[in-house]
Amino acid sequence: MKVSKAQAAENRAGIVDAAARLYREHGLAGVGVADITRDAGLTHGGLYRHFESKDALAREACLRAFDWTITPFAALNASHGDGEADPQARLQALVHGYLSSSHRDHPGEGCPAAALAVDAARAGPEMSEVFAQGVEGNIQRFARALRPTEPADVDPQRPLTPEERATTITTLATMVGGLVLARATAAGNPALSEEILATLRTQLAPQQDQG
Amino acid sequence: MKVSKAQAAENRAGIVDAAARLYREHGLAGVGVADITRDAGLTHGGLYRHFESKDALAREACLRAFDWTITPFAALNASHGDGEADPQARLQALVHGYLSSSHRDHPGEGCPAAALAVDAARAGPEMSEVFAQGVEGNIQRFARALRPTEPADVDPQRPLTPEERATTITTLATMVGGLVLARATAAGNPALSEEILATLRTQLAPQQDQG
DNA sequence: TGTACATCAGTGAACGCGCGTTCACTGATGTAC
DNA sequence: TGTACATCAGTGAACGCGCGTTCACTGATGTAC
Image (cartoon, rainbow over all chains, first blue to last red; front, side):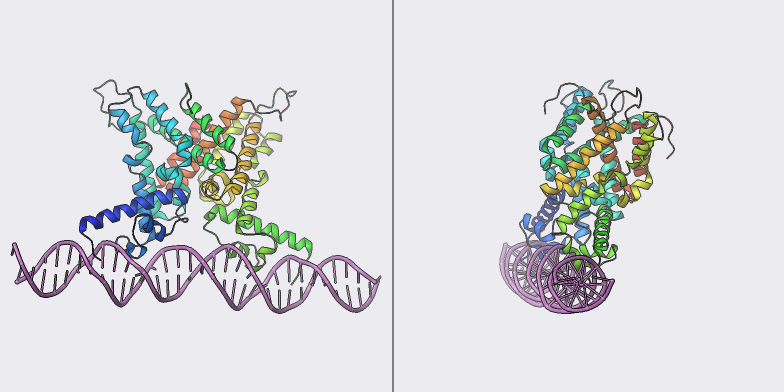
């Protein structure tokens, strides 16, 4: 039966959200369209009224997963506005959240760069473009969120300096690599997995460590 | 027809080698057993005389891919023995080789940690165990290869200090994360992909950069 | 050393099975009058 | 405002297709005598 336009839009968004979560959990090749629509409370036949193909849905799901507001980096925005004022404390909060056992064990709600990078590299140029946009966006927001808020007369949206880009890329790459290695070793050698996370927390954000 | 024991062993090794290469190129889910045996010059039917299942072959292929002698890290052994004596120069050579466009564009002969980590995380505890062994081995060899060779009376095989482990884990995680991100963005934003590689080369091994 | 024969690595057809996609159909929606 | 009807989101069966795995068969190997 037909549903209202509002309901249809809601269903479509539900499919994208379900895909974004399931793809991060099981990989692009590990989830079928029937799994996704079932998870969204629908049947698989109607999927093609919304998306041209599974690949098109995967691209949209990847874009969605990089959405700033649902990423692990979301906390940064809040803390930048009214939260922690000290950039070093913000970095510490972010690094500890990212390199946590909880993030490692719940890829479905976690960083898409860590969960989908290897799959995206094999999924063709269009997916790579979506992925690159997400990574570039993360670099920008990550670097800006860690800038000092003083002095107040400096534009917080000014372009990144080469140094800012370099240190941000390095930190992001280390976090992504660490999370990826921690996940791959978690089931087979939990101690090594924890050691990787704890080591990188300390290396990236010195000072006290609270797991 | 039956073949000699020597030929059978050679065929089996050929299957493992083909699997190690194809899995790194296309992922564990992206290659069929028929692709692998065809690549090894055989038909798919006989595969099960050598391996219990596709998963068992995948595990053996992962183990093989981590083999020190065919890894990008292989150069380290040689250079440790009779090559570059300066640890800083060895680090530089390794980092530049690892974070090169060539390594990015040829995952089949490259680092299994970068190519298979995300797949391994989803492939069950047995695969994770194999992967964890490979990572631990890489930590050990990487750290030892970068030790100073002087003074000569210190045992080069002595256990790693906590500091050695920490800096090695950080460097490895950064290289893996960087390569993974460079691969995922290569087709969609080549400039960003190159920037990631170049930035990390400079950050991990300061001094001159030769691409 | 020679011969007869059991073994078994490899072949290629066949098997279920799950996948992405298509399609005839349904019936509530939303528009035209 | 009411009514008739075209639209189209969603359903569920059906389609090819490729996959992992099985199996009867082949014939060179390697062993027993």
